[in-house]
Length: 237
Length: 290
Image 1 (cartoon, chains in turn blue, brown):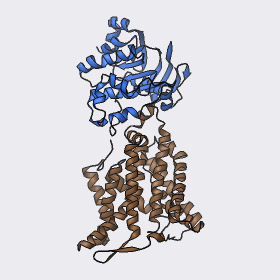
Image 2 (cartoon, rainbow over the protein chains, first blue to last red; image 1 turned 180 degrees about the horizontal axis):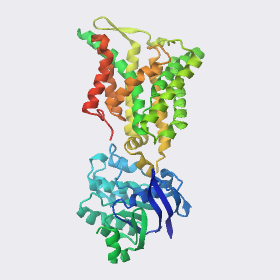
Image 3 (spheres, rainbow over the protein chains, first blue to last red; image 1 turned 90 degrees about the vertical axis):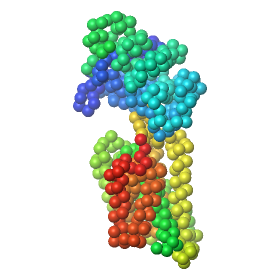
Image 4 (cartoon, rainbow over the protein chains, first blue to last red; image 1 turned 90 degrees about the horizontal axis):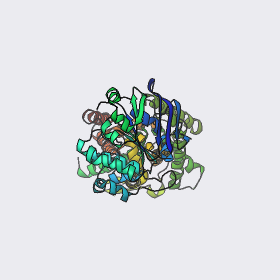
């Protein structure tokens, strides 16, 4: 079932035309990868969906409803959760407060994510609950930012560059299993933007290749993994 | 200097400091969260004094305390109007434009005040309950009202501390001061938070003005006199930091008071020497949030 449909959007930063006619679809329960080099437009796509950098043209439909004119907080209440690349940890308040100020019911009034469940998936956050956000390591911050967005009980998670700045062991041993678990055990739908294509393709069902603000190719993750030509053209593996 | 005189000046300085803190606390929270250098904050302080005068004189028999409450509410309403109609349109614009707009508020509020209240200096009597003094060692007369102002400053500081660190609203303010975009992406209605905080800041300025009323000549222009000092305090303390505003208010209040005692003709300069020293050594202020 289709949950998100981005249809022919154009997005600008000031006068510079960043996204050109970008279209993509995400089905319920899937992980869809947004692949491409640095500056390809992955973050702008996510920011457009979230309403942070609204698209100038085109439509974004979430659960069938057009959301491209909505404010970010309204889009969050419709059920989209955004985990930004810079993590956006609130530095002056505790880990626990970072989690609790984000807590809200899902769009259909459910509370799937509780603190207990968060601590089950992210035991490190339980241990650090009284630490201030600014005192966390990069890996701990990444856990917190994902956990915090889960506390909003989203139906769709936009995960922007979760591997960035993390040690390879953490990426492979912790993050990979975590995202896989979110999909398989919790049924979370994820749009995953990553430069680390190997990581991303290992998790995703479907992938879109973005270059210079436009989608150039889309296929199942298995087909992209098998396609050397596309990989060398659009990805840096 | 005699020790008793020193203590006396210290207490007088502290009452001056607490008045500054009431005004500066509102401005630093507004500047920190909304990122608007609200030059008209001093005008809200002035309105606090005028409204207190107005309520005392138009409702005979009204106690000073109630006049203060009414006046603070009135200033809160004016703050809400300022935020809701013009200010929220310019959050994304440059500070230069915001300064210009808030400066225009000063001129408009000044003119409106002249229109309604005239240009005469008005005075508010010290409330009877506190119209007296007691004798400190060394035969110094300490006005009760100065002690009352210190008490008000400390109570407000404590309440603000509780509000900022112990309530959800306060945590949202701290979070938004660091990253408002993230807060909105998490589903928080940030514009509504801004309005609330602007009203709170206005209320604090109004309270400062009402309390200052009996000490100063209530006049058009009292806002402009105080706003530069208040900005100095916010910068020294660190934009958005309540603790910083508290400490910097004490520094500036005492510097002024002792400056007048020791170097009367040079007293004003001390505040700005402090500002320059902080800007050169710790440009983010003593307790910058972030």
